[in-house]
Image (tube, rainbow, N blue to C red):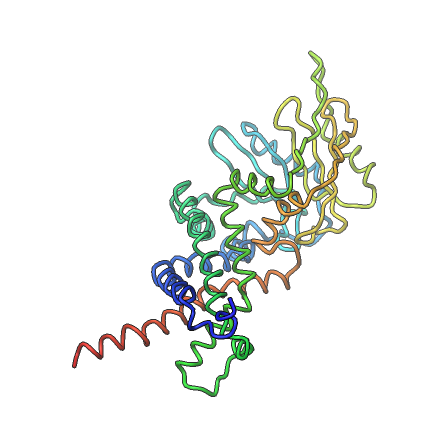
Length: 375
């Protein structure tokens, strides 16, 4: 350990980890490049959808936002044979209402004018943004692609750990690894860029790697977190058993009851019951349009009696907090535009590391080997 702290280049383990880091980067660097670039682009998924399908995201005229009840009724009339799952009110990033309707194996994402409540159309099943999503999450390969992505995320985490060991230059010189001296030879600048960008971003890239593993292997990840900090079993409130011949409460009555419980907030989402015992859920936002990443207040109602159902209140563990933050941290949805811009820029870190690492390998190994063999 003392030798590593003072003269890390002389330690065999460090040299071995350098080879692991090098060949992982050469072998899988292009894969890391593609996943990182697509992930960075998807930070602005809604903006891309708005640019590609302006007719679905453009209100017909300015005016007050239509009541959620009107939206629910309009979608039900427009899709009489489908099952409406719920609606989302306009957000700061999406100015139209969003609704979800399923019919058999078909699932439609529907956009509705926020002022006139007219159905504007459906998001196409095949589009540039959808392909980008499938490439990022599943490598265009369905479940198999997602498993491959999970393994790739584990390899990216290994790159972070080995890179951190390699970055350490010794107790007397480690500060030089935190900056780039652009006045030196271009090859040294590339080395400094690779080292500096890597060390400053290592925690963030490691976070993306760990959360990427969680998406590919959710049950295993949840079990691992549970071993460290037991997770709270979440119990969604349920409606009472239906009385034969009794009709469920109307959407109007249920929305009115929910608003009475949260009088100073705005309906951000309505989730309709998926079964006879499921609850009617209304989620409220403190502002309208709904701010990106806003914390919503949930009101569960008995679909038959309209009574508010109480959510079980249990002490939350550290593991619960970890699971809550997996998605927001990976996608940058826990803040406003500034966080999304930062996540986009920082998401280009792995491509930067791949390009600088590849240039170092090419100039130091491939070109040197080629020049030697031509003599």
